[in-house]
Length: 195
Image 1 (spheres, helix red, strand yellow):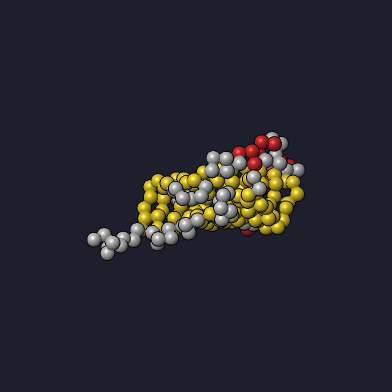
Image 2 (cartoon, helix red, strand yellow):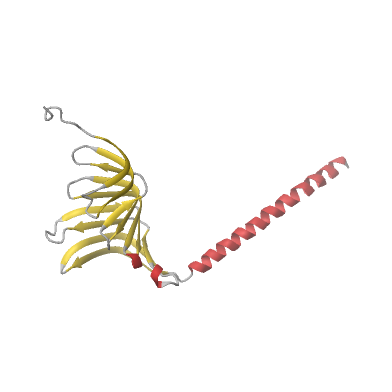
């Protein structure tokens, strides 16, 4: 008899916890349904094997490649954006010489169409015509203002062997005039040349 009472007491204590758990699952499920209903119809057909060349006055300026691009069209057309979730590569060309003067590669790319703003996320690697390499987990490129910037840590590996680190990176879109805040670095000094 004592074991049955103990069993019922344990069950009575467990019942409110179980009810709380079930109600939280229902709330989570409702939230998932709400998010899913908001996303219905926002994805326009995915495009695979993207190989896009952009030009200005019949001269190539950008060559963009991505294995997959998804276009999202929310209800407000000004907030349309495209996502390259499986990686993106952009090659920038000098308009006059038609020589490659920089690249940007990232795990994820986002194009905010209305703002002409490209957003690169995770394992971002950018190079300039001099061979300098920029690495970060975030990079923004505004094609209208021709500026690139990041608010996360950026490492710059210069062709000379010097290395710089810093936050709040900004440069022109050729990566030739960088500016870093809170920067540190390792610079090689030629002692023979200093005499």
